[in-house]
Amino acid sequence: MTPTLIAPVSAAAATVAHGALNPTSLVSSLAPAPTPTAGGSTANFASTLGRATTVTPSSLVGMNATNLRKTIASLNSDQQTALAQQLVGADVRVQGATGQIANGTLNKLRIENGFPVFSVAGQDYSLGQLVAINKPAYA
Image 1 (tube, rainbow, N blue to C red):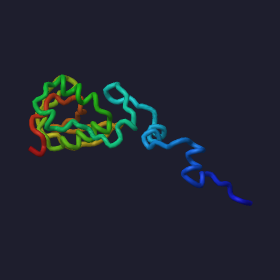
Image 2: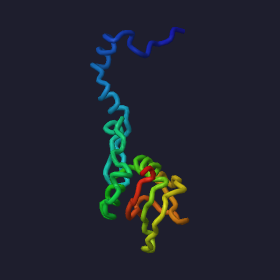
Image 3: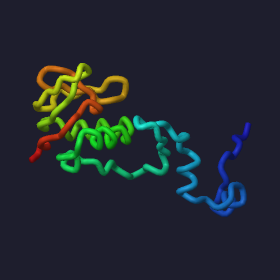
Image 4: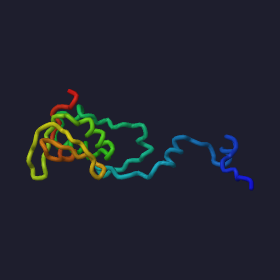
């Protein structure tokens, strides 16, 4: 029994069989469909290849609570996790579910259901409960 040739034997044969190959369209065709982010928008894998989050702890220092929460909500879970990792050791202010405010060092980061959860003053919080970043960890 002779094996069947699956792929064309030359670039010319590939072009005839499949048309001209464009690496960008190839990645786009292989990428999964757009997925919803934490903020409700969608992200396309191919459009975000090689693009890291531009949100850094220092860019969030001094931001009011509303804008801070909007910025965090616009990030997908991977970007939120990356931001939370950069925030470990930072001096932050958080607001608990009952409205209490706590100040302290962000620590004990873990991931629950794909999103970061951290501890401040012995209590667990999500990034959406940040009210302020007073001082980044590395400052």
